[in-house]
Image (cartoon, rainbow, N blue to C red; front, side, top):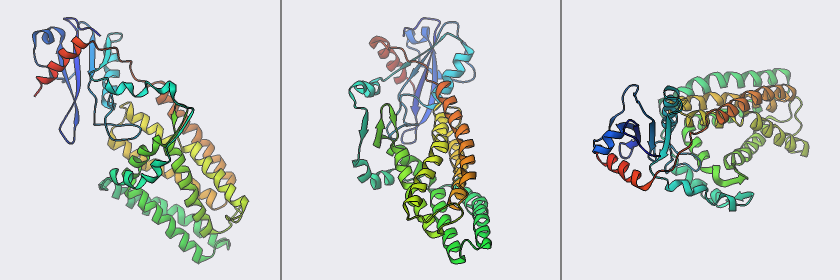
Length: 353
C-alpha cells in the first residue's frame, strides 16, 4: 500500500476511553506528506486518486471469545462497501496494527478437533464477566412477548390439552409456571446470555468451525426439555419422557430445532458484523427470533408432524440468510503496510486531538 499525492487516506480509529466510539478521519496524500493533521470525515468524500482506508484495531466490537479487540468494526465494513460503490476499483484497505493477524498463523498445525473442557469450569466466571444490566428494551419484551404473546400461545396449548382430558389441571399449572419462569429469565437477561454464548464459542472446534456455543446450547435445551416433558407427561405422539423412546425423541427434536433455527442467531451476527444493522437492531432481532422457540411447544405437546413442517420451513429461511451474508458480505482484503508508511500514519494519528 503506497500513497500518492492525489490519494485520499481515511483513518478508522477508536475514540472515547472506556466506552469507545468508532471515528473516521480523512487526509490527502499531499497533506500527509506535509504533516497536516487529518480532519474528521463528514459527508461524501471526493478523491481524484485512490482511496486508502487504514483501520486501527477496535474495542467497539468483538467476535468469537468476546472481549478484547477486533481488526475491524461493522461500521468499517459498511464504510468500505460504500466507498467501493462510490469509487469502484479505487479502494484499498490496510491494518494499522497487524499484531492480531498472527492468530491464525498456526492454524495449519492444529488438529481436526479441539475441545477445551476447562471452559465449563470457567462458565460461572465468564457469565459474571458478561453481565449486562437489563434495560428498557428487555423489560418491554418481557411485557409484550413473555407475558403477552408467549403466554397466550402457551395457554392455548395447555387449555386445549386440559379440555381433551390429556393433561391434569395441576400439571398444566406447573408446566405453564415453569415455561414462564424460563422465558422471564432468558428475556430479561438475554444480552448477558448472548454475550456468554459468544465466550463459549471457542470451547469446541471441528475443523475451521467453532461450535462451542452450539454444543453448550444443545445440552442445555435437552435438559430443560426433559424437565418440561416430565411435568407434562405423555401427550399426543409423545411417549413417557423417561423411556428410551422418550429420551431419544428429545434428542431428535432438539437437533431438529437447532439445525433449522440454529443459523438464525449466527445470521444476525453476520448482519451486524457486516455493518448492515446496528447493535440496537441486533438486540431486537435476538428477541424476535426467540419466538421460534414457541415451535418447540408443538413437539412438547405431541404435535410431532406439524413440528417437522415448521422446522423445515425455518431451515430454509435461516440457512438461506446465513449463506447470503456469508457469501456476499465478505471482508475486503487488507494489503501489506510498509514500516515507513506505518510510521507516517502513526504520526498522523498522533496529531488528532
